[in-house]
Image 1 (tube, rainbow, N blue to C red):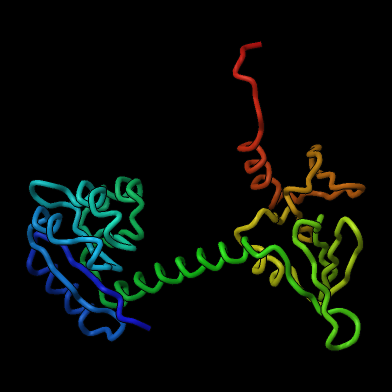
Image 2: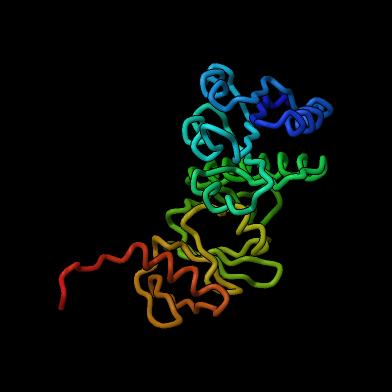
Length: 245
């Protein structure tokens, strides 16, 4: 793993010193630059620096960390706000800050925040990769036999305890998988869990009626714990007239 390149911007030397120490004592992190003056930071950081993390104080003179972040957002992979004032939390997330750390910041909290951000990014990229994969293989029958299934042909998955029933437009298959394993594979795609036992392909839903979904000849129940999320998703795709009745 290459060292993650870090920048600290804060108008207090003490705060810079603390974060610099956290970074320099971690072999996976590299302190590239520090700035006491936010305006100098604005001209002192470029895309060519290939910065991974900017640790940015919010309450600074001349220009706030929020305003500075808007100008630096494309010059670093992640921006982490550091401040003693929780009142800025909402504004911080409005500029897509990766995290918000409240001073005083302990070293364990600092390190955990860095790894949480990287883990979330890894999962996001993995989700995109999985979403782009158009098919997958499952083991069936005798050992060594595998079946290729196109995602677009799947109507839904049905949990059968230690097995999973895959219902496609052509045929049904029972495979040795769990719901958890299926959810992991399809995280970030158009497949939704709508019931404790059902995981459906949203693109194959033909009708929503009360607590049920119609997919081809199949009527799938929606559980109370899962229904609301799917309904909200469908609302965002509902075409409505802007005319008054």
